[in-house]
Image (tube, rainbow, N blue to C red; front, side, top):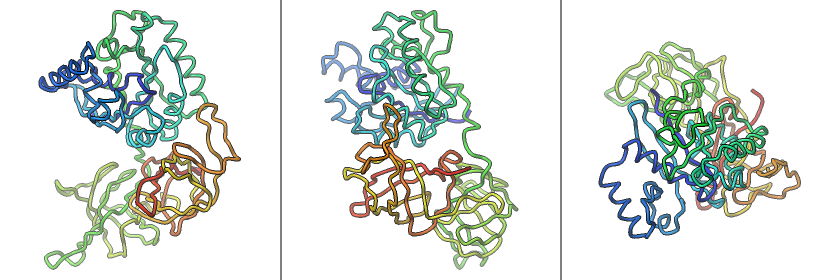
Length: 416
């Protein structure tokens, strides 16, 4: 079965790191020496119990403060499936880390403390997961042991989140009552909640279907590198290399290279392991074109009758991460797939209030951790799809031209 990439999200102290620790421990995915180290550190801290959050909280600053700061990636597997976990921080000042963790996952695991219900950070993370179009969402209502495993408390959280999420763009939402500390409904079904008729969290993660989530309709190959022939190669052995961002490419396909508009056919597709008859996203390949065309890094290979949008005016939802506010007239570097361009902020349409989902059209700027709709004018055209259609070709990052720090992430809008 295809590996599952998922990220945790939620407010501070909702139990994200503890839940991941419980998953790793109860699924027998930790080595004995790792478990012993967690036990010893828990004892030195005076926790009085084995603090499973320490399994993922690897930074010294995190362990000292008891919070998650960085995005901690963990890998584990069961007989059913392998997993990549991104444990993201809950503090509002680390929203950028949450965006990073959720931009490449198949599923978002959102924790809610059953005693607190849906709080500001729950809403913020739900909005980001919706904007990033994470295909699957699991809401883990945690700390059920602290309310005596009361069904009405669980139902109240589900109703509150459902009412908020109706205004967002989710197609698959599952609610699971859990106690990460006690292990209820994490790896095994809990006898403490006989009223819950669903599966344990791990069973759901093992069987959620993600095969239809990627765009396999629109062939897209952003050119990362042009492999030119040397003295030992055939004169026509000129290849383009890159990671397929959508669809399927086959030997013999007629293809179009953008933005030049030149057409040719695919003579050969190869990977490190040898030639292939076809390749699909997200494979990294080299492609030999039948004709010697002028192709360079940042170009896009697609099908003539299935081409992306080519343009310089870019309308997008932006998650702003910079310390300095984003204002109309600002100039930034914009990286889209393998292409770099300069872009000017032409118009700030509105800032989104994550609590009410109200569009603040009079907002003069986007401050750090704000989300808003922005129109950019790029100095050169880029080849893109809407983010709704293709997460790879519909997204970009914004970079400060002075210190080259990443200051924003964008999801391109438009008509499909």
